Amino acid sequence: MMNQQRAQGFQDTNGVFAQQIKARRASLNKVTTIVTHLPTVMTDQQDKPSTFKGNEKKNTNFLSSEELSRTKNCLKPTVTKVTTSYALTSEPETPHSQTPRQLKRLQVESIWQEAHGHLGKKYWTYPKMITECDADARPGYSTRKAHEYMDEDSVLLEKVKCLATMIKKSKNFLVYTGAGISTSSGIDDYASVAAESTIKKKNAFVKPRSPLLAAPTFAHHAVTSLYNAGYVKRWIQQNHDGLPQKAGYPQEKLNEIHGAWFDPSNPVVPMSGSLRSDLFSDMLEWEGKCDLVLSMGTSMCGMNSDRVFTTCSKKALRNGNALGGVIINLQCTQFDHLSALRIFAPIDTVMKLLLQQLKLQIPKPLINVTSSASVQDYFYIPYNRHNGERSSISLSDQQQKIGLDLREGARVRLTCGPYAGDVGEIVGKNRDGHYKIRFLHKLKPNKPLRMPFERLLGRWWAKTLSNGAISRSPIVPV
Image 1 (cartoon, rainbow, N blue to C red):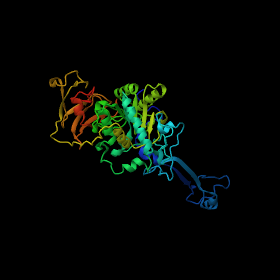
Image 2 (cartoon, helix red, strand yellow; image 1 turned 180 degrees about the vertical axis):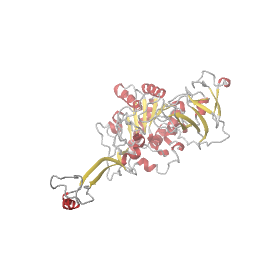
Image 3 (cartoon, rainbow, N blue to C red; image 1 turned 135 degrees about the horizontal axis):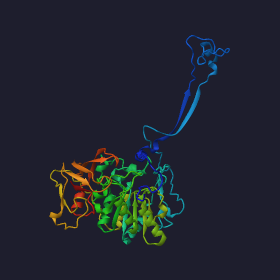
Image 4 (tube, one colour; image 1 turned 135 degrees about the vertical axis):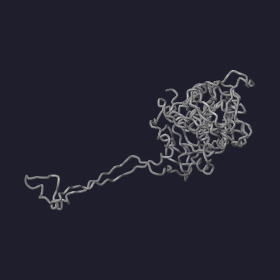
C-alpha cells in the first residue's frame, strides 16, 4: 500500500520488537551454554548374571552391579556446547561510547557536501566528533553510526546566515521534525544510544513526570515564531507529543503523520501500520509544492514521510526548481549528500541564532492552564453533527452551530480514523487541562470484543473547532 509507514527495510511482523527496540537493542549478548549429559545405566535389583555372557539374554535392558563396576571407566559423559546468537539480559545495557581522547573530524563517505551541504563552502572546517559510539543509531533501519558531531562556531554562524537567506526566499517553507526536537523537554529519542551522548547529558535532570506533561522546547517556540512571521507554511512532525500546539502553533497547520497523543481520532501508528489516508494525502500535496524543507531531529532512516525531504532536495539538485533540504542533526543521516545545507549542532542553539538573524522576537514560554471548574467546557462549533465535516455557515450564526459538551459525563463520537464511529465518555481532565475521554474500541475489526481506552483531547481543540479552522472535527456530540 502507498501509505504504509515504512518505505523500506525491516518489517516488524508481531509488533513487539518495534516497541522494545530502544530499551533492549544493547542487551543482546552472545551466550555459550555447556550441557553435560551423564551416562545413564540401569541395573536390576537381584544382581542378575551378566547379560553379555552366552546367548541367554533374559533382560538386555539391565546390567548387573558387577558388570556396571567393571565398565564404569568406559563410560564418559557427553558435553554439548550450545552458542546462541543473542539472549536478552535482565537489564538493558547502553552501547559503549566515549568522548574522543584526540581531535577527530567527520569522515565523509563520498563527497565533501555531506559535511556542509551543496550550498556550503569546501574550505569550511569539517565538524568535530564530540561523542564516539560505533553502534548503529537505529538498528534494523537505513541508518548510520551513532557518533555525534559539532560544527565549529564560526562555521555554524555562516550556515545559519545561509539558512536565514533561504527562508527569506522561500514561498512554501515546510518544517519536518522527529524526536530530536523534543529531547530538551525530557522526552527520549530513539537514535541517541550512546551513554556519553551530548543529548542525554544535557537533559539528564529535566524529565517530566510523564511525557504527556512535557513542556515545549525553545525550538518549538521558535518554529511558532517563524509561522507567526509568515515564513513557515506547514509543519509535518513524526512525534506524538503535542508540543507544537503547546507552544502556540495552530493545529490546522500541523500534520501529525504518525499519530498524536492529544487527538483521539489519530492514535499512534505502529511501525508496521498504515498512515491515515487524509494525513497521507496532505503530506503528498505538500511534498509536491514545498520549495524548502527544514529537517530537525530526525534520523530519516526510511520512514514514508522522509519523502518530503528527499523530493524537495532532488528537485533542487536536478533543475533548481526548489531551494532544497536543510538537515539539523548531531548525527549523520543517509541523506546528508542530498542536503542543500547540513548543520551539526543542537537544535535549540541553531534556532536561537536563526531568530537573531531574522530579527524575530525570542519566544517566551507559555504558562500552562490547569484544570478548573470555572473553565467553560461547552462550545458551539460550525460542524455537521453526523460526519463532523465543517459546515458552510457564518461563524457568527450561533443557531446553526452544534453544541460540543466536554463536561464530565458527556458523550462524544469519533468521526474519522481507525476507530471512527466509536463512542466515548468525558471522564475529566489531566493536570494540564486536557480532556480525558474513555472509549470502548474493538481489538480486532471483525470481533465483537471491546476494550476500554482512555485518550486525550488537547485543550487547544476547543478554540480550533470554535473557529472552524479545520476541515473535519475529530469528535461530535452524541
